[in-house]
Image (spheres, helix red, strand yellow):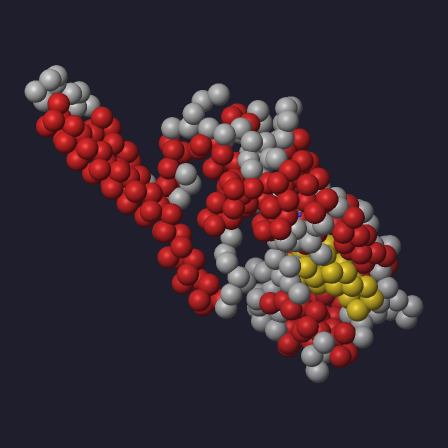
Length: 355
Ligand SMILES: Nc1ncnc2c1ncn2[C@@H]1O[C@H](COP(=O)(O)OP(=O)(O)O)[C@@H](O)[C@H]1O
Ligand SMILES: [Mg+2]
């Protein structure tokens, strides 16, 4: 929508995981190195944790692209499953054949998996199971996963498991009852947020990939504010930058400053606080700006009409006054009242100033 206005070919801050935009910060590189370490075999678990939006899945996709051909990967991204369902998903991911409609018990799944691991091991292949959103795994599923890492030949373990998840995954593994699993973690890495410097580089990198050929549309204060408000989390940086560019575009302003970032943050970032209160507040907050714009427009139009009427009354004797303006004011009221979503972006979004 706004790309052309800023001299870009694409919108640079989509939250879709587009590999073209991959930015390898030192932390992302380190996280990738940990996942690749998991490919070396030897059994046990590799753990990658990080806040929502830190880039875990992005790194994981990058990892999947680098997996050598002699390595089979099962990738599970929805682990809210029972033990039987998860074992079935793992077998499906490894393309272990089963008869159509055949229901297998957990033991039958494990036997089929064991058979597959032995067969592939015999021809020099490695097998890796990657589970994303692993903080959603239940305790009995985790225990089953631990048992899978027991599958072995005389000289080596047959399955390496990579668990990727939010920080609570670390806490889960610290709980009593999961000590045995925790002892099998051979490498762990916590993907932390970007520093202020990295945030600036990340923003610039995405702008360049999106086709930027002129000066960046964020001034220094804006970038500092983006880092402070996003706390260096890429997903939040994207949300903020995208909305800030939209806001600037709507105002016909070529450079985003800290004030525009603040306005964007009020719209796209949830204020901190207890979850329930936060949700209720943010719901009302979401409507506060459009409501204020609509109310302001109504009051403005009313004042304008009254002033015009007064002016008309006093000036009627001298010369007739033009009557077109109130109609356009009323139209802008109608526009902002009928498009609350667009109005939460600065109201002029529908007709930005062209450069
Ligand atoms: N290293 C990175 N390079 C480019 N974009 C990234 C990077 N890390 C995160 N992002 C952006 O942030 C979004 C959220 O990242 P994601 O990997 O889904 O986070 P997580 O899995 O940790 O919740 C991605 O879709 C992508 O747009
Ligand atoms: Mg993810």
